[in-house]
Length: 392
Image (cartoon, rainbow, N blue to C red; front, side):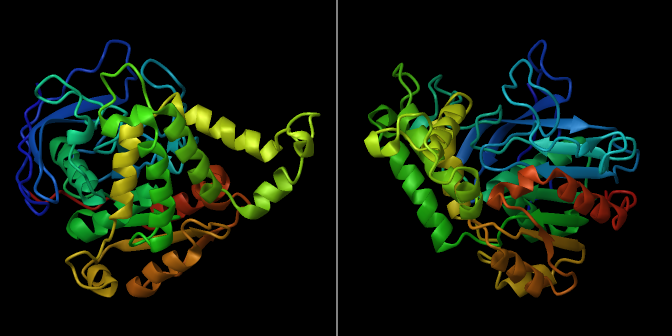
């Protein structure tokens, strides 16, 4: 088993002494895992035998100065690019962003993506076994965005990376990118924060709460301890996804795409279904086939408590302590993370203008507008450079 000395507090910088856990036979060759014997959360709770899974592309330079960290969103994972395969039910969610000659060029860069603590893509979460041999379930500690970042810092320690050339991500991934600036400013050469926020808003918390209630009111939820019941809260998770998906797309797109169209020849006025209703049902059904309800609850709670300024002063104080490059990108039709939240970060940083992605698709534009994302990423890479030998 991998042995990694975990940090007692988020500021602890002790070097990891780690050996990688074996990956399953036939697993994606980019996939890796390490184990942490005792991880301490932001609120002081302990997760023994934490497993952290991640994927890598490219080669780390001798100076360890060409490392890029990509952060996934709520129901995303570390499989940023590539096809489906054993243990990987979905293709990459940012196609074309990583590879030879891509914006994150694997001929020159070493790219890392880490599965979030509390998720269900290999890193320890509610679905995994606790030391007593039973699924963690409701006993799994409430984790935060800072905990996710601290776990990523352990991966960086294990890989010998003292400072990332760039940390980038959208939505929940953007929360982690800005949290790297807050928690580890000296380890973050540049940050690209896309369709995100410096803190959760009441509106975002409210939308998340309705999703949590949908899951928790499913009788199969069993207070979060359904893993040994033979049943899963798919109805609640599917409803949560329907609610969330409304916030991910713009009203204009839904109107243009579906309008009042019926799904079949059976008219809605006669009891038939609108096409937009069928679309939301499809989105819910897709998610329940690949995602765990316990992880959805844990990560949604983490997003609700996100605040890069917590115990640090105001946003100008946090960003004033950061001497790296911060670029902030808003999606112009985003109604979940509206551009005003990005403008708040830009104003507090005061050294870069706000960048914008034009999209009719709302928040999901950061996943859909591949050409615009690629151009913005290429530009920020051109304005960063390998950061020299790591500090030892």
